[in-house]
Length: 130
Image 1 (tube, rainbow, N blue to C red):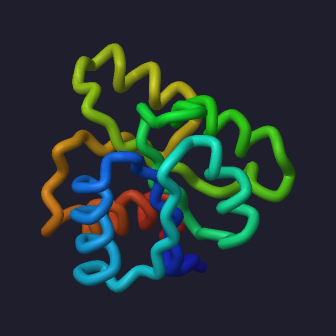
Image 2 (cartoon, helix red, strand yellow):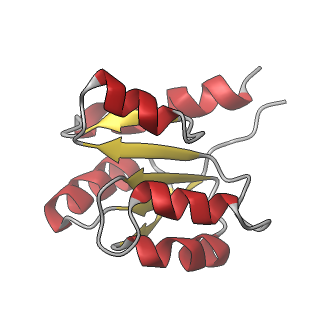
């Protein structure tokens, strides 16, 4: 039985990228989207919003994406929420290191806003449509 992806917590500190991401996710993807601007907000926002998925920037003020992900994994309320990193890091060894943290996937910035929602849905479906 598949679980439907409805609500995404999107953590991105750069306003212009955040706006493009919101357009891609809300307007094109029709997802419910909650937003964080710093790594320090992610845990509290995840507890409040109860997202199906967290789209997490790697480099943010406060906690980095990997630090915030580790915090999420250390709490029972948030440990099972799937995470996808979004990053400008493109070297294979950087991607491998990010994947080793237990995320579902890594999306490279700049991303195409017209395919972002589809890409996230495909990653989700890989996990839940079995």
